[in-house]
Image (cartoon, rainbow, N blue to C red; front, side, top):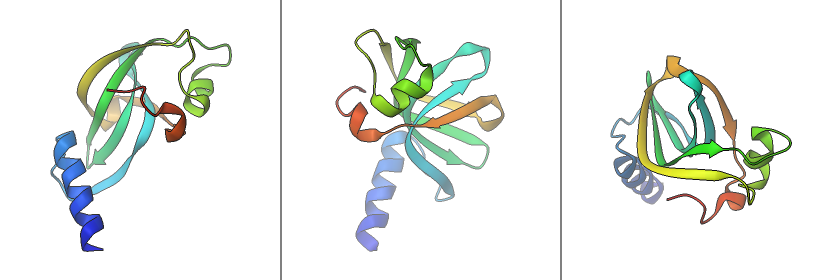
Amino acid sequence: MLIQKAIETAVNKALGVENDNITQQKLQIVVLQRGWVVVGMVAISGDDVTIGNTSVIRVWGTTKGLGEIALNGPTNDTVLDPCGVVHSHKNSVVLYIDCVESNWAGKLP
C-alpha cells in the first residue's frame, strides 16, 4: 500500500498535481470549450483538471468520431501535436472519453 501511494505521489508530481485530493487519473480524450480536443493522462483535483503527456488532436482521422480513436488508438490519418501539460478549470470541460491505454502505447509524449 505504501509503495502504491509513493508511485501515485511521484506520478502526480510529474503531472504538476501535488494535491492528495485527486479524484481521477487515467488516459482520456478531453473536449474543452472553444473546440480544443486533447488526449493525455487526466488528474482532477477540486476544480482543477490537469492533463499530462498531452497532445492536441488536430485531425481526428476517423470515420466513426472520437470514440473510434479512444477505443482503437490513433489512426494513420490522426494528427497529434504534443503540448506537454495542460491545465483547465473543470467547468471548461465539455466531455471526457476514456481511452484503451494499450492502444495508445507509444503514441503520446
